[in-house]
Image (cartoon, rainbow, N blue to C red; front, side, top):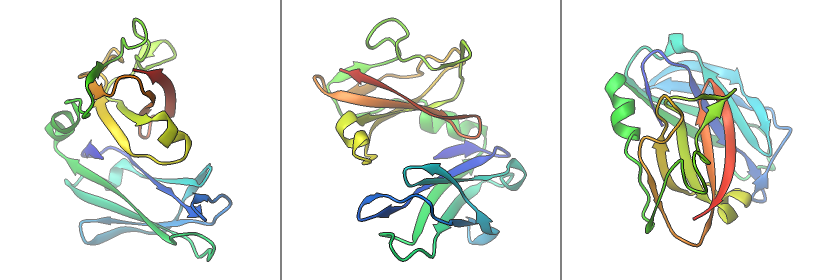
Length: 192
């Protein structure tokens, strides 16, 4: 993920046991900026279903660099006891340049109007959400906990998409919307 300097970074990790989400773990986090440890042994928060998160405060992200979090548990039943998560922090132009272009290798253009006018527009309390991440996954994959991204774009100030995604016609997708540190992930299903 890409973010501008001096913004909070929300790292996520997914722990599994026998390839199913593992809940009730005690999870700590170490965060590195480049090769320098900036956080050691911080407590992660359980979201549910095996998903855990940690928010690195904006005061710790003033330097443009790669930020890697390593989520750790001592539970011996999990498939992997250490799970990484990564952010890249750069100047203000980095986020817009990297994420404004929609992508996907499908045959059909999909945007905020797919399924009806503003059907996939991202709003909170009736107001468009700016610079939110929009991601598309096959519904069957997403429901099974497989997060293989099929397309990504961002939103404009009115909550409409900056660029369309290109997805395959005739398939059902789960579209996720999020703005780390501001709004949790929400989803909407659409058949292209």
